[in-house]
Image (cartoon, rainbow, N blue to C red; front, side, top):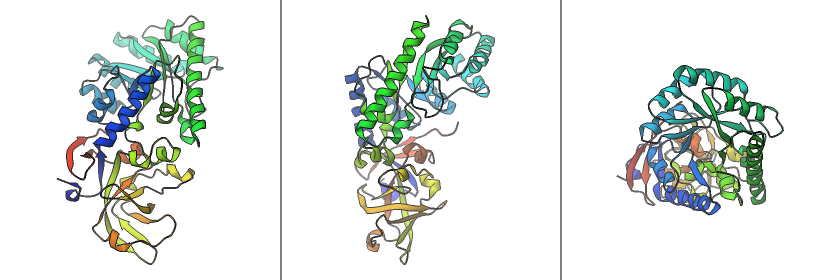
Length: 377
């Protein structure tokens, strides 16, 4: 089979690019002397994750319990659930632990400590916990100056049913950086925050064996990871237009794309219509705030090569509107009805979530495999 035999829209994954992206970050982490704990939220697939785990200690990160259940079924035991815990999710976590999974939870309040401990004691187990840190004001977590850091650590250390495993932070604001210097500085801010909080806990007589940091931009630009025990990243496997716009990768490194068909023309408007709307591409417009706005995606030929300055400039539920970003005339012959195009996504995670499988190619248009994804929560 090759791409021309597929029904569109569908998700394409280039295995060669995937492998190159994974090897690049793995080598970088080895040089910096830390373990890479790959995040499963982007791939949501065991084949890609096994590639990412080569040369690492074997633990992964997840953002949904569906991912945790799926990866555990595939033989991965060491799992960090890197989203603040809610009481309603504890029964599924406890079931996984009883089956042999080694789940580490994340929290940032004494209230969470108490309901987690209560549930664990009832089951006769001890749940390891990481304290979530806020290193950049991006979202959840406590700061070094926050009295609750030591209060949470102390409660975890002294309460039956839970144990203090360490600290975790995510430099989500790195996605807003606009220069190499800014990303390098953000990586150091992420590291120094995590290390300082770990040292504060130790100074208070509390254990802190794990110091976990990570985002794809900071993983690419960190120059020093002293005091850090592991780095988490996920989208680095695939990359996307947001990452390319930040200078984290090149467009040609993007491993995932949506295969779509041209289904019509609006010549008076300079539009090509495809069958990939926002249900196929997602509504993510992450490049809109960047110097180059890629619309809903960058349009390439079926071979993966960009088609001049064509982008998906508009999207309805099942229709994608393709036009030239500069308002230049389109070569209608190259976009004839039935023509296949590949669309690079703004956000690989959001776009891939629309599909249940990857059609895998290996630096060609030939399909070499089908890899299934796990979706949902």
